[in-house]
Image (tube, rainbow, N blue to C red; front, side):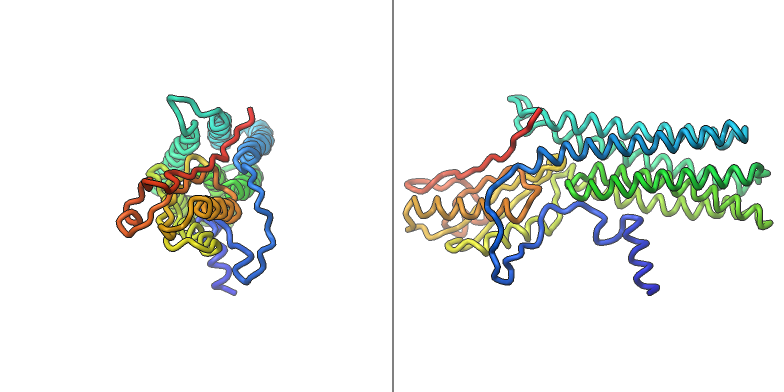
Length: 355
């Protein structure tokens, strides 16, 4: 039971198996049942809309939370609570940043930006990670300052109430953003979810500190603050690793494994050399396949088409799949278009943006 609770806690902080978005999914016909439809639907259209929808509603929840905290501030007159409320309102503006990123990601590719503006989403993720880092530094500084210069904590009831409100509001937003972020494979939205969770942890520290003071242990306030600062730094590390990996064109190993798994379902493919990268929450794959060099052109095209269909079936986050042929070991290691009477490039563009 303790081990299970530890695993859930690590996952809650972003260290678990579900802490990052994944681009593939396990295919049901690994056991022989091939019952999926092979109709290819561009998942990036509804996922972008869903991301915007999640941002809108999470912003509403944070606005309600801030209003409730402002009400507590008005009743208690606490300057500390006012500062914390202003902090939460300022952090809520990251939702606007992500909103802009998702809107830009819907724009059509141009000659200047042939891959579209999906990278803006990754850039927003970097800014969010920096904001989380700043929150951790501020929280740590305040905790150390309270250890060196102890302060008399007043308005315990109001502090506790405001802390509970702040934690519940931010945690609701965190769960919402992280869940939708994983659904649409958006590292930026997931990072913003953990950003809300750090704000919730800060509010929880207020509650723990107030309880400590009420029990006669005023030093509990800065100690809890330091512990939560450590947790926030852990979230910074996990979020930064995920977002920076995408900025550097990295993908989860499971994505490449899924491409090879899709190839196993297509007879005639002898070897696969796969590359992939994320542009925002859209996955782009560049795959070279090796087939029998004596195979007729029509048969080769059928294999490529079947493989393409399998890729989209295995990987709902896939936006484009460019499939090429390589018929010897040298080409397999360094894939390039094949010459003579074989198809040079078999690419599929499933990138349809609805304005």
